Amino acid sequence: MVQKQTLNLFRKAAGVVAPPPKLTVSQWADSHRVLSKESSAEPGKWNTDRAPYQREIMDSISDPDTDEIVVMSSAQVGKSELINNIIGYYIDYDPSPMLLMQPTLEMAEAYSKDRIAPMIRDTPTLTKKVNSPKAKDGNNTLLQKKFAGGHLTLVGANSPASLASRPVRIVLADEVDRFPSSAGTEGDPLSLAQKRTKTFWNYKWITVSTPTIKGASRIEMEYEESTKEQWSVSCPSCGKLQPYSWPQIRFDSVAMECVHCKEQHAEVEWKSRPGEWIARNPEATKRGFHLNALASPWEKWSRIIEEFKSAKRKGTENLKTWVNTTLGESWEDKTNDQDHEKLISRRIRYNCDVPKEALVLTAGVDVQDDRLEVEVVGWAINDVSYGINYKIFYGDPGQNAVWNQVDAFLINDFIRNDGVTLNISAVCIDSGGHYTNEVYDFCKAREHRRIFAIKGKGGAGIAYINKPNKVGRQSVHLFTIGVNEGKDIIYSRLKNEFEDKPGYCYFPVEKEKGYDEAYFVGLTAERKVTRFVGSAPKIDWVKRSSNIRNEPLDLRNYALAAFRILNPDMRYLAENQLTGNVFNQRVKRKKKRRKGVLSKGV
Image (cartoon, rainbow, N blue to C red; front, side, top):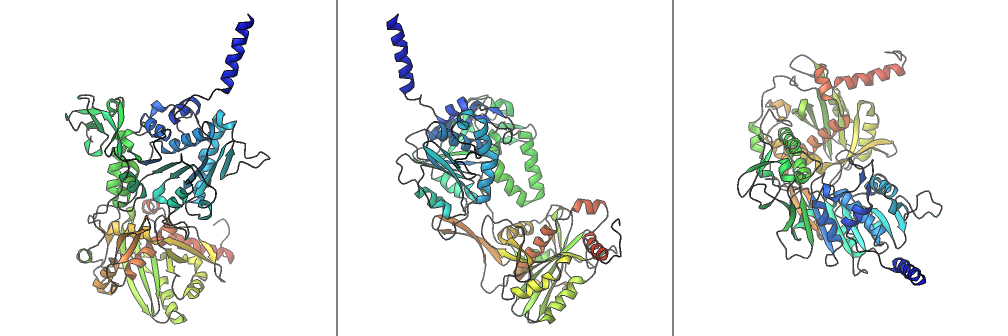
C-alpha cells in the first residue's frame, strides 16, 4: 500500500516538472482559442477544420527549419485570425518578444482595441497571462502587452521611432502593401523591423497582405521569392489536384470546371473535397502561401460572381479593387499612357453652358507665378463628368486684380439646356506654390461658399481626401489631397470609351469653352512609373516630357477633390429633380438667419 502511494506521488511530481507536450500553432488554437463576438461572424471555440487551408500556414510557424512565412491573400479568408492565433501561441506556449506592424499607428491602435483585447479577454489561457489594462502595475497598455517571458508591441510602419527600439524574436507585418516606402527618413520599415531580430537564432518573420499594383506590390515580390504554394483540391470526378481558379468558374451553372477532365462541379462539391498546399518553387527556403476568396467558407461563389459583374460595370477602379481583395492578385495596368488624340475626337457639341444630365458643378484652381487657371466640371449620376469651362486669368497672384477676376467667374450662373440655373457648389484651390498666404486669404473669406485651400501630397497609401487642419494666421481650413489616388481615378475614367458605363468623361467641342488640343495634351501629360528606394518600390507620376504643361490634369484632380469633399447624394438629387444649388441655398439661408430675416423654423 505504501509502495503504491509512493508511486502515485512520484507520478504527480513527474507531471509537474515534465515539459509541456509539443504543440503546433493550429493544435494550440484548436485547444485554447476562443473567437470573440466583436471580431468574428462565428464566435466561440476555434476549429481549424472550418477552413482547413489555415492549418499548414499556422503550422509552418512551428517548423524550426522555417524562418520566413509569406501570406498573399484576398480578404475574407481569415488572415487576421491567423495572426491572432500566432500571437496567442507565443504568449501562452512559447513566450517571446513580438512586434506586430500595421501600416499606421492609428491602425495599430484600432487593431489592439478591436482584435487583440477581445482575444485576450475571451481566451482563458491568455487572460491568465496578460494583465488587464486597468491593473495597477501598468504592464498592459494599448500598444504593449507584457507577459512572463515576453511582450507584444504594436507599431505603425510610418513611425521610425517605434521601429528602432528593443530586439524582438517574432515580427508580424500586416497589410505590407499599405506600408510607406520609408519610415520618416530611416528607410524601408520592413527592413528596419527585421533588423531587430538579429540577436535571435530562432527568429520568425511573418508577412501578410492583400496585393495591390503589379511591380510595386511588396507582398507579391516576397511571394515570388518563396515556395509559391497554392491551396489545391481534388476534382470530384478525376481526383486530380488543382487550385481554385477564376478562369475555371462558370457563371451560368455557378460551378468550377476541372482543368483536367473538364467536368463541372458545384461549390459545395469542391469545398468538401480534401486539399493540400502544392509548391511551385519547392527549393525556396521561404514559405509562401497564396489564397483567393473562392476557397473561403465565408464567401459564396454566386456572390463573388455578382460582385465581379458589378465591379466590371462600374469601371476600372472597382474592378481593380475586386481583383486585389477577391482573387488576392495584383492589378496590372495594361498601359499608363493616355492617347490625347482619342479624347479630342470624342468631344461633343453642348449647345448650352451645361448639359441637363449634370446635377452639381465644382471647380479647381491652380496658381502659377503669372496666372490663375480654373476648370469647372459638371457631375452626373454614376460619376459621369462634363468639362464645362477651362479658363486662364493672367496676372500677378500677389495682387488682388487677378483674384477678383477669378472670384467673379466662380460666382457666375451656368444655364443648363433645360433652363435650370446652376452655381458652383465647391472649389479647391492649390496652396502649395509661392502664393500660399494669398490663397489662404482668398479662401478664408469664402469658406462659407465652400471654397477651400488644398495641398497635394504624392506617394502611395495616402488617402485622397483627409480631414482638414486649421493653418496660417488666417486659421483657414486646409485639406490634404492624395493626388496620386486622384490621378489613378482620372486616368481609369479617361480609358472608359463607352458612354453607358460609369465614370465616362464628356468634353465640349465649342472653342470658347477652352478644350483645345493643348488642354488634352496637358490632361494626359503624366504617366505612372515604379522606382525602387532601396528595396522598396515607390510609384511616382511623372511627366512624359519636361516641355509639357500638366495644369489640366491637376485642375481636374482638384475639381474631383471638391466633388468628393462636397459628397452630395446624387441619387437623391436626381430622384427629386434637384441640383447642387441646394447646397448654395442652405448657405444663403444660414446667412439670412444670422441677419434675422428667417425664423428658425423655416
